[in-house]
Amino acid sequence: MQRDLFNTLKAYLPSKDFIILTGARQTGKSTLLRQLESHCKTTGTPSVFLNLENKNLLKMLNESPLNTLKLLPETTQRIVVLIDEIQYLDDPSNFLKLLYDEYSATIKIIASGSSAFYMDEKFNDSLAGRKRIFRLLTCSFSEYLRLRGKEDLLQEVVRIQTQPQAKTQQGELLHHEWLQYMLYGGYPAVITEPDVSEKIAYLIELCDSFIKRDVLEAGEQNEITFYMLFRLLAHQSGQLVNVNELAATLKITNETVVNYLYILQKYFHITLVKPFFKNLRKELTKMPKVYLMDMGLRNCLLHTFQLPEERMDKGEWWENMYFRLLAEKYNPDDILFWRTTAGNEVDFILHSLTQPRAVEVKYDRETIRESKYKTFRTTYPDIPLDFAWMQPFDEDFFRKIPPV
Image (cartoon, rainbow, N blue to C red; front, side, top):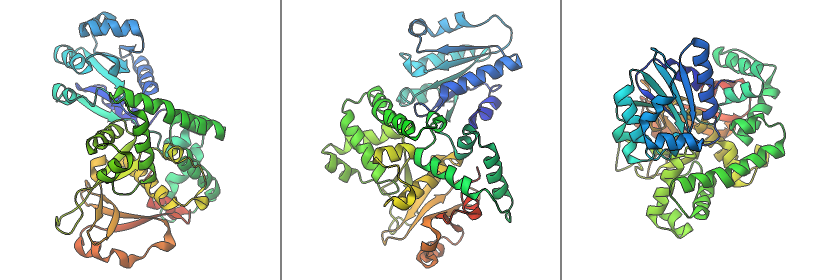
């Protein structure tokens, strides 16, 4: 199965800019590069795939970026060079800069890797105007259905979302798949694993192994405290992030908390959503809210894979899920929230649109009280406010979430 990002990357192949593909571990970056390699072969585009987990190859390219040229086929066409795990290079920023400045007319680099080199301040400075960065998240619900071989259900969702009066006879099947997606998340290996116990075991491995690798790669040593912070954030998803409180709880400095939050963001495990405001004196302007980027990972950190009716956190669970849906469609900087010092609140303000809009998320439609949002509507009459709910799970549910 091709990820949705495949077609976007394919469209950028003729452009001059180098492409940087980043994202959390195990989201399918290497597979996506291999699919682009196959596309190049199909279209007759010269290409070469370089996996920097190969120690001999890594040593060769560390000696000189120009050694890359020795690996290219002889051709008069521009060559696509696909580099996997570029963060293993000693100086990936300088490597890419030199090749771009001297050889961008003859080679097109598409590089994948974790966020280690992307976190380097030199990265943006040295590659300004030379690269396009794309992030590969864990699978969206549409990708989940395709990976599960449920193309018929995906088409049913599309039909419901595009036909306002449509009814479905597959509601129970859709409900089952949706709950599976919310419970175990969107890591490709989790989706394709049929055994529930193995799904959970894989998520535990992600928490215990790959996230620890992120910590070490980022140059941090205290992996236990880092992991404890991550668990606290999972418990507090959808809530304000108070650095002082987190530092006091974990008995570490504010600076350490801020650094850990930065690492968790750069490795695509969390997103900090900023507040929306116009009145600095009445509206809360400092603390962001936190959301996790994969629901299976959140449930693993919370040590619970219970169904909604058995959970105390179903409201927070659904709010985090809705954020994850928004993250597929919007730049993270364009998703905001609104809260005043008096306690008035709206979960999401989508601010990049020509017509901004607001969304309040409630697990149960019956708990929505329109009168609670009078202040927001009075303050921002030009921003329409809508509601999204999880229960009841019917055709309107799919019309309230972003299109798949």
